[in-house]
Image (cartoon, rainbow, N blue to C red; front, side):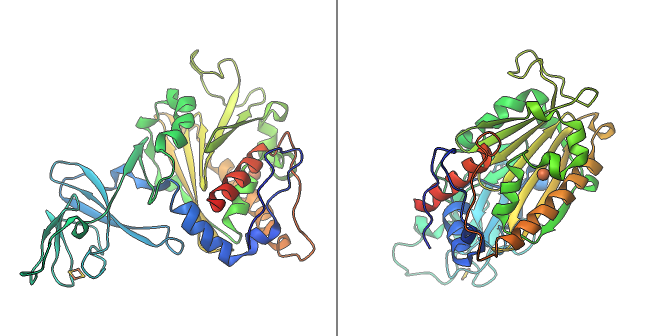
Length: 360
Ligand code: FES
Ligand SMILES: [Fe+2]
C-alpha cells in the first residue's frame, strides 16, 4: 500500500487514511524507515555512573529489537555499542555488569569497553584479521538534560531536532531535575501508536474530553508552533492557576504559561510544567497496541506543586477517546478526514513528516 502525500496546504489537505493505522505491513515499514532513522529516548544518563561497567538495552522491543549495550570505559567515557558479537552474532552481554572487557560467551571473543576488538582464541592463520569489521559498531549517544538518545541511522542531526525545545525551556534549569519513580507509570493503550500521537497533537478536544484541564486553560489563547522536526503547543493559564515564572529573555515573557507541550518526531512528548517535566515515551508494541511510559522529573521545590493526579486523569480521558478511534478506524466506511486549519496544525505536521519519511 502506498500512501498519497499529505497536501502541504492544511486548508485543502486530507488526514492520513484509516487504512494506515490498520496495516501491519505499513507498521513494519514505519519501523524500518522512521524508527531506525529518528532519535529515540534510550534511558537516563545515571543508569551507568561508574567506570568499567556495562548495561544491555534492547531498543524498541517488539518493533526494532535492536540489541545495544551501554558501557562506561576506564576513562569514564560513555559508549553505545552493538551488543551483537562480530563473530557469529551471539548477544554478548545479557545482564548489567562490571569488568574491563566485554566477552562473548560463545567462543570467547573479547572487546574493549569502547567496542574495539581485543582478542579471539583459535584464529591463528586467519588472513586480514582482525580488521575494522571485527570491532563493535558504535552509535552516537546524545545526552540532553541527562536523558540519553540514540539513532541507528540518523538522517538529521540531534541539534536540529531538539534545538527548539532547549531554546524555549532552557531557562528552567532542567539539568538539575530528578526522576521520581513514585510519580511515574506505564500506560498500555489498545491503539495504534500514531493515533495516540494524533490525539496529543491538538488541544481542539480539550473542551470536549478534559473538563478538569479545560477549567485551568485559557482556550482562546492556546497556541501551536511548528519547527522542522518537533512542534509545540503552548497552554495559557486562566487566572489563579500555577504558571511559569518567566525571565525577561523568554519570548513568552508577560504571558501566563501553564505548560509547554513539545512533541518530537515521531514518538516523544516532553511536557514542561512549572514543577518540571513529564516525559511521555510512546512505544509501539505492534500496529494495534502501544505502551506509553510516563516519566516524571521534578525540579527543586517541584514536589509540593506537581500535579500528577491531574496528569493521570487527563491520560485516562485521552485513552478513552484514542481507544474509541482505534475501533472507529476499523470501519470499511471511514476513509479519511479533514483538518481544522487553526487547531490541527500539529496533527497535519506529524502526518506530513511521517508520509515524507516513508517516501524516502
Ligand atoms: S559468536 Fe561470539 S565468539 Fe563466536
Ligand atoms: Fe487530550
